Length: 177
Image (cartoon, rainbow, N blue to C red; front, side, top):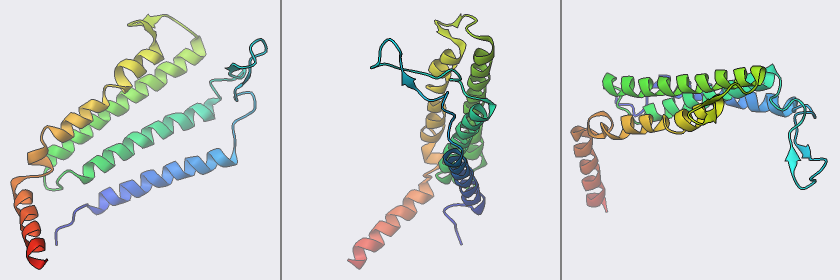
């Protein structure tokens, strides 16, 4: 029997969603400390300013990093649903693009942690390092995943035999009506 999705992908989706749900529940049970929350500016009441511990503690930053990696993981897994299970090239391309995306996220996260500890140390292509990673990396690297999914579409996700089977199903449906 042909399966549309492998069990390993289904279990990976379940793992990712469960992990994100656990993070959400932990966030609801242990709310952020008051000094992190935004408060009215003393001179300009219509403007909000961050608290004295605005970057958050190590747990807050760690939860943010874990959330980002879990989201990238779930993006990868849901992308793999559409890639043929008998085509290792498509899976390798998608996993490779996702690993580049995750590495870019980790570089941005490390850059942010250094920025929090050391303060402003200069610019990279006109921005502080964490902002440069976000602007030049995190915004553009997901396009790599899109190209890996779209460009080899005919061979990786919708090969000629799938097209023939799809047309047969349409013909059967029309005949049944």
